[in-house]
Length: 81
Image 1 (tube, rainbow, N blue to C red):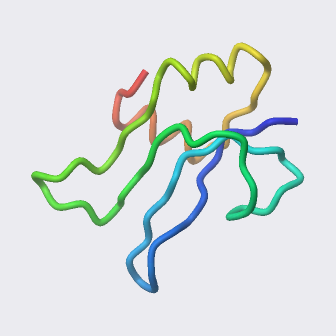
Image 2: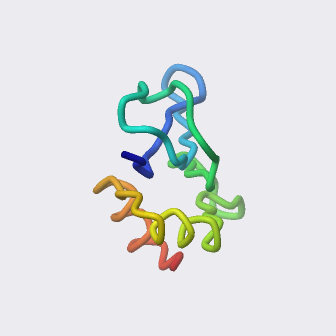
């Protein structure tokens, strides 16, 4: 099953997350199928902190991908779709 979830990057105490579509059997930060966007919780006011490629997101949803609860909340909070 394909799931749209966050993959953590960045250094200690400075997280940076990629929004990816991945096989649900793969590890959180492991192999993924496609990078769909990013989320930076430590972004300054004038720096972009969230981006999502809506076209590719909708494609993955149309072929049956499930969305993690955290990604759903981020999309809702940022009104991305």
